[in-house]
Image (cartoon, rainbow, N blue to C red):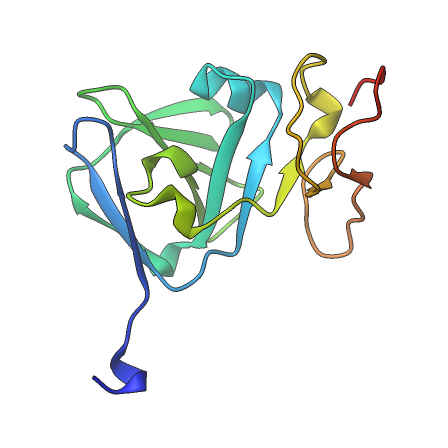
Length: 155
């Protein structure tokens, strides 16, 4: 196979396997999100997402159900098993944000940072040296710190 014909594919699926997807190439980013809305969507202390361009992504099997959690914010999930699958929002046009836990091989794309640490739960912290962003990460946005919060402090 020639170098130009090689494709890097990442696959994923819901818990029951009704919905399957793939994306080609590298994701734009992989982040832990600490915001209240994302925590509620996954019923956990943190949600981890993979941001990919819409043109990289496609469903292979099934179509997710949709819940509009707020104006311009769409959350996709499996209508059979309830697994959260993806997020799309007007603030990120042309992107789909997939839940990391739906990857067939989660070790393939490790997280690169933490977003919305200003909403982080006080008793939760990840002991990694990744950058922490007060709200979202993006071009020109400086992290508030790297690594866990200092002992005895909030976000």
